Picture 1 (cartoon, rainbow, N blue to C red):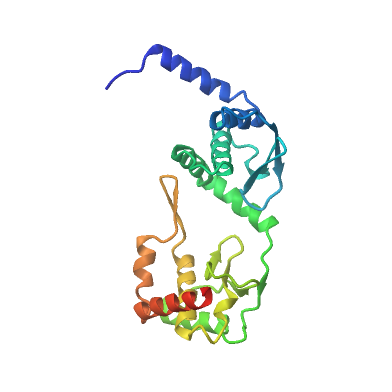
Picture 2: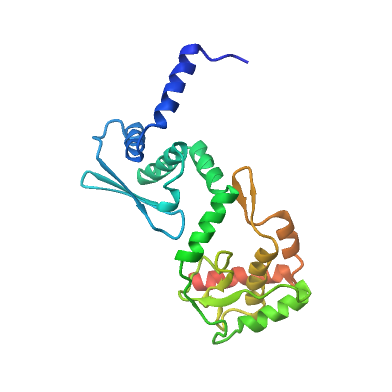
Length: 253
């Protein structure tokens, strides 16, 4: 293995040491210069906002670079602020962010105490607007009870159930652990969606209660091997997937 020269090591130590004495604005200015060395440096304004999650936004208008960061990230160490700056500014300039920066930022968010902080904030600040589970065509409560008895021995506590307030064609269903709620898109509450399709989507979301997301090497794994194996136990699994595909094509056209 070739050893790095003393000059290189000293130079890198200087850069890493300087990072810890920069303000967040200075970090964004430095990253901006790195990505756009020939562009005049704009005025940089960083604001920490009381968001319900770790979302952050950036805009460049009339020579003003405005960065809105969740206040949940205000205490994040400088290397994490730098990683977020690389991600946000890369997206602003339509570039692919450095994978090392993405991995560093994900590892930080996926730490157990950070996940707990984010979930607590989402519970306290977030609002979940959904329609009642008794839809015009399908009753999610009755369907949940049937699936619970058939596939989970009736042992799964029922979360809050409901239809989405807006008809999403991309997110057919989701389980929100922060609010302990399963939501299905209201597009499924239609004669166009067969009973098999709706049951399959609800069953899929119920599996998220039994098999929570896992965090491996800084990455969030939602559909684990155990999850996928359990999903195949759904009666008429192949047919349900084919019918779901046809339904998605019909509502997308």
